[in-house]
Image 1 (tube, rainbow, N blue to C red):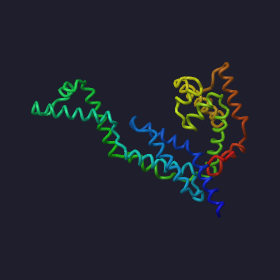
Image 2 (cartoon, rainbow, N blue to C red):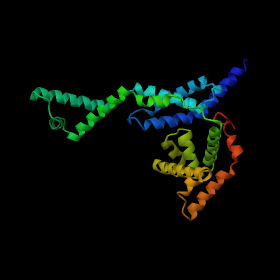
Image 3 (spheres, rainbow, N blue to C red):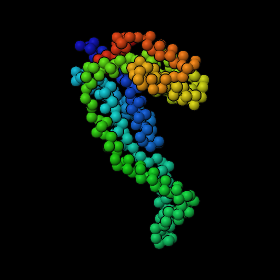
Image 4 (cartoon, one colour):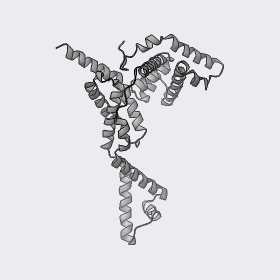
Length: 283
């Protein structure tokens, strides 16, 4: 019995490590839907805590793959974190207070509610600035009241369990994806692994590679195109045929990359990279 507890703890740690990129993906997805001032690190912290809790409460006998089980709980934790935020940034609040103070002064002077041009004149800004500031405050209020409730039902309810055939397809795709990443040219592979799997800042990756952040962004875009086309070439040839590469050295390099993906394994070895629950298998 004493040996079982450490083994279970190690298994949970392995599950958490293997699924940390899932938290990063969900946080990036959430950040695309919220105001720019929302702190990424706060969301990551909430997401990782939910991932650890999901690993503790996971029961494989229910037949739900852990990534799907964890995703629902991580999304729920991110939504809870967002509900507790003040959706208006400090600058928005400061502009709102200045506008309110100027409006009160003009009401006292004019004996009526000032017009927007009069308010803009007092503040030394344009009418458009006033309208934009009021719009920011309004959006912040709506976000705060809604608490992103519209996304709650879809995000928290667990999806139906994948059937055996669907799980085989998912595992094959994951195997191809791993091989496609491994087959990337060295610099592109370093960018993909650093940015997507290790969650490293782009500036840090740029320093390691001795290039600018904009160059890292270009390499990331190039890698994603290669990965997409490489996956489509092997899994969805009809999709790949819609955008065939042009002739020349670029086309030859791409063809060589597609061949490297294929040479890295077979269907059996790709399925062996993940277990029946969709989790990566330790090397």
